[in-house]
Image (cartoon, rainbow, N blue to C red):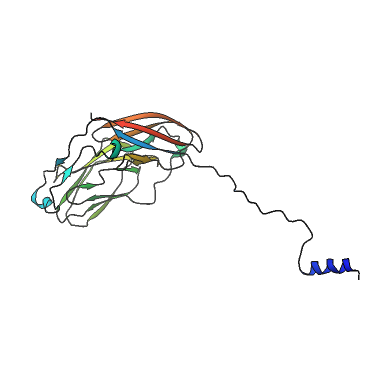
Length: 244
C-alpha cells in the first residue's frame, strides 16, 4: 500500500471528512422589533394642594396620621400619575384575549388602590376588603351593568367584570363617600396607567397604522393626539392635562 493511500484510509477510519466544512455563522439573524408607543403625560398649571380626607373614627384608626388625597398626583418635572392612556381606532384583528393576571381593586384604610386601572372586556378582576369593617362597592357605569354589594368581612373577595367598552367608569363606596376608583374597559390590550413620574409604555406589538392616543384623568378629562406608527417603530409621545 502506498503512503498516500495509507494516510487516506487512516483519515476515513477516524471519521475525518474530506469535504470542506462551512464556517460557523458569526452574525445574528435579524429579527423584527415589535412596535411600541411610550412617553409622558404632563400636568399644565399649578396643582391644587392635597386635602385631608373626612374619615370617620373607624377609618382614622387605620392611619398613623390623617390621610390626605390629591386630585392631581404630580411628580418630578410635572409628570402626572394615575392617567389612563390607551389607543382608539385599532383594527378588529388587534383584539386579543385578556391577560392571564387578574387585577385587584383593594380597600385598605378606607382608600381604594389603585384609584385608576384598566381592564379588557369580560376580564375578571377582584375586589377585596382589607379593612376590619363594612364597605359597600357600587359601580356606576353609563354603558355596562351596574352592581352594588356589601363586603362585610375583612379579607372578603368578590370577582366582577364588564361586558362593553367604557372610559372612565366610576366605582364608589356608599358607606365612605370619599372613596372613588375609576376603570377603563377596552376591547384590546393597548392601554396602561402612568407611573409617579407621568411615564407610560403601551404593551409591545402595536399594529402599524394611524390611531388616536388618548389620556383620561378623573379630574382632568380626556386629551388626545393622532399618532402614526410603522412596523417596528419606537414612538415617543408627550401629552398634557390641566384642570377642567
